Image (tube, rainbow, N blue to C red):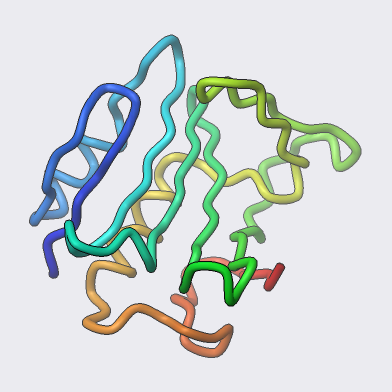
Length: 136
């Protein structure tokens, strides 16, 4: 597993074990958090964005700056209203359709899958297959 930098509303830390990743992703500020996860301090791209609110998460991956709108994760059936959404207050309101909501446990699996990849994906075919991905 490669080490990664986790910037979030409660601070910034480096995680290099699955236990550290899970403990960091469990951190909350007023019931949620926003994580930007990247590999090196000298480059913010590529990065993974994970929004959390309670047990719900939203994951977006930015492979490169400005050349791609990125990819968002989906595919977990949670029994949520297909017409509904989840409000993330991170720190301002961000509304995400229920189609793209995952559990915190799934978010941990996705982040760990990324941290097993030496060179992070640059295209759809290279994305971790623990969830479905939609190119934006």
